[in-house]
Image (cartoon, rainbow over all chains, first blue to last red; front, side):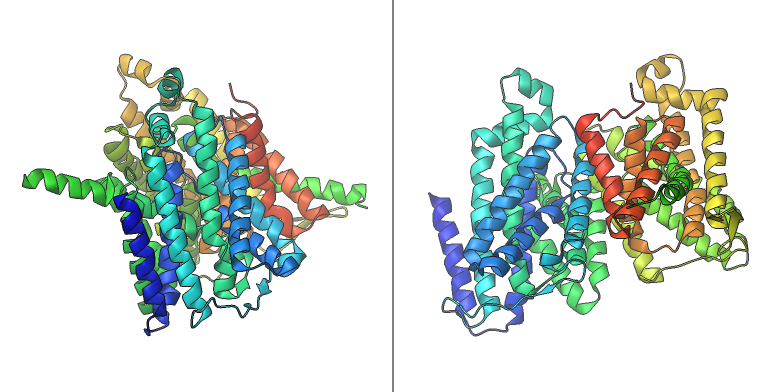
Length: 310
Length: 290
């Protein structure tokens, strides 16, 4: 109950911010940061709770984004429909990946997800309707729902999506699903023997995780008013979506949120002040450092600090 | 319609390409296939090998010599990398799956970005007398650079096959892949042997990297597509089989070459990843796996 009040207040705060008279750049950068909150949270449902490392994040983002493009181009669907459509299709992709890789564990699962990225990228490259390799320019529709600019509206939409995904992750964590997934992570055989329907919960986790990534990707074409395969299918999304939860801490739903807010903000600052390449380096170096020195992420560090100060 | 002649040419080129793919995958076949280390950074080290070759060849040395000279350096890199991996992950044996993978994935990105920061995103090439000209037999033309790569590939595969079957250390590496506990009972130190194997796997990458830049221009982000090619070959071969690696390389090479000829070059990247996904879905233990 307390959580839902906080969640509601957070949404209200974001609404207030997007109506305030502040620099437009805040919304431009804030959209990306909130998008990473969704991505990191979505990755953590499968990667953190169940221990299945998904390298194929861009595939799900792109399915969301390209579904939105097709919906927009064919029936000029409104943003909400685009997001729902992108989420459903990316969820289906998640289910399919789950079905195909049921027997695969560890690195085999991860490599299979990378394969999905490149196969889909090749298909989109050769698909004329959505612009092929050159990309597609899109004109934003004029409806603003009362916001001053389109970017502000998208910022608010992404804020709502972020709060929703975090709530879903939080619900999963303490539900039957979350407990089952943790059992799978510790030992799949033991879980199966204790009556956990490992197959079913893995598929559900794949679907939810994929759908949330698709939802995060769906507003992208409207955000950039442009779509192009090389940037959309970029593996840089994988390292960020994987690095943020691991740096934040994978055991609790707040971990990916902390990781995403912290790292995506650093990334935005680095992109503006230094260069785009360097922001990937920041995540890469921090990821390696944390994995080696603080395997439980920032949450683990806080826990240790609390225990030692007692 | 594709004529038989063109198809034949595609297959011939595919054989050359296939041996090349087998050679760039040999290191992974040892590190991942035999030792079970989630070595996702393998393609990134391959590209690093190409760039080091590029730097060394500026002195006027032949790229193949450069590759050979780099082998000891890469051997040491490999040993250091395994030592580090062992100390931080294998010995603690706590949840190595997720963290080990994340570690090597992170290393791959760090190498790639460092290459971009130092060399830029431009494509780099090397020059040698055999690059640019072709051998003509009848109506078929074979670029010398592909033939050189073919030669190196055959040489490396034969060398490693002999090493693993004839020498004491080679057999020990195979043994450690099969049963680590038994090796310890025999009085050998599995960690030392794994370290040696990892060093060899990375050293092979130096020569393979030189071969990569001989075959064509290299750019930092190329490691991403080679994740597909190398893992496709290793998974197809069945983990850790050297001769299987050659056969799997040939399958991939011919498939890619035929697809390029029939559907166009824009479909080529999907071939390796498609084969990989198919194999993982149907028979994850590979064609020649137990």
